[in-house]
Image (cartoon, rainbow, N blue to C red; front, side, top):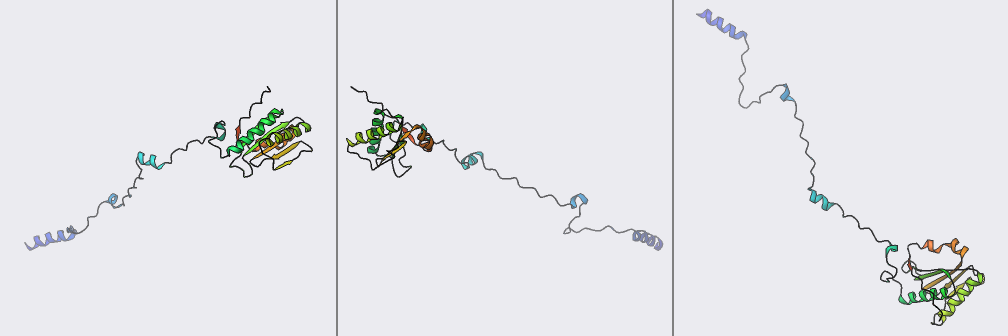
Length: 199
């Protein structure tokens, strides 16, 4: 009996005993489980479409260009009514003296020396001088005198300063050279008066 027990114990002693796992020990998993899991990337938060639309700036409305505004209405101008009447009187007097290409530019608020520029062309020195004299005489009847007159002896460019209105009487070559209309492309153009019909 003793031999059998010893033999049995000997066989059992040769084999390793299985390890008993306690409930508080961590169970080791296989090699696949030992790898750390890749952290799940959080999805970028997207605002609802309504909130995105509110966040966007509203589209800008196209601004009306100065040329698109009606020239017949004076609501856009900051010029005085007296300056407007003076400019119209100057243009009318010039047209009566056969001035060519008469233009009235509203520069009120753009410069501090005048509200209107009246530009015209004379055919010669004598014609430019006659235009300047005719304008001066016509406005003198209304009690308006020029502050200064320059360029009368030659007549290629006569400048007349009436305070709120500045008059440029050019000959054609000088008008093209100085190109005042080109400098004031953004200024409003007032319609030139029609020539008076003699009775």
